Length: 335
Image (cartoon, rainbow, N blue to C red; front, side, top):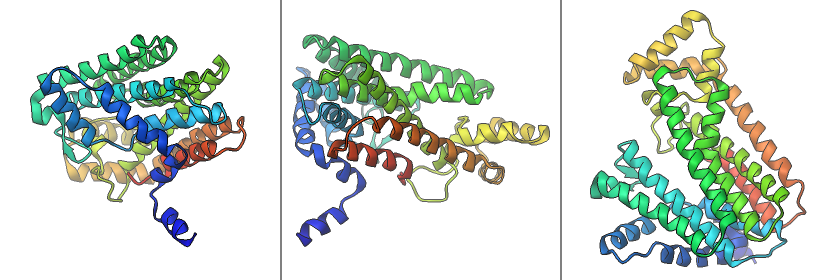
């Protein structure tokens, strides 16, 4: 018994969250590998490279935990397919994102575009997208297909909206939340909706779980915004969003709550001095001093509480407990 207790103490938060669905996650990995197979050797080499460098796989975890929670531990083969569709689409967007951002690294390794160039990376992303959609069509999972298709549409709209607004630096808080809901939160909302739909939940529960995922997704992105203003070593350089002229919530709040002269200095700093390390540090200090971090933390807690409130509609279970841990992990994570 003491050995088990010691083992639990040594577990990282993600491993602890995964405990109730450990067997499902192991079987999922095999099914996910199969879903990526192709008759083209080059594609198989690239997808093998992708699988070997997998992330935390939080999105499939959402699918499984929600499915189990809303059905009192029930499960269905559709749940595996739903999780595979989500991970295929997510992987496709990451491959395309690295091309868009001209990024050579992903999860500490070389990105697909760095190793095989942009043309092949775009085609690989398209291949993964089509694989995901066909997995639903071939099995007539049209309800799951609709949920993931909405997410793909909204992610594209969110990305384009951010590009459009970044040119003018005129993002209001309302537009900011619309962007992050579409760019980040919509896929997590789809995960939770698919989890519920895969086990035959009614439309009310599916909608409820989509909102749950959306709130967690928004809290997740707000936490990412805060990393830009931290001194901790997190793997992401401080001030990177400012350098890339991304309008994050701490900055938007500060712009709306300072003098006209200070606002002019801030906008000028982001437009013309975003590559100047000293000026970027000054912007970070100004945002900190003027309540941007405190306000953003409060907003993150607000969305965390909204997600937690939804779970109060469900009886206690190990799956609900893991989802509550997931909410806490999202807002407390260090990277």
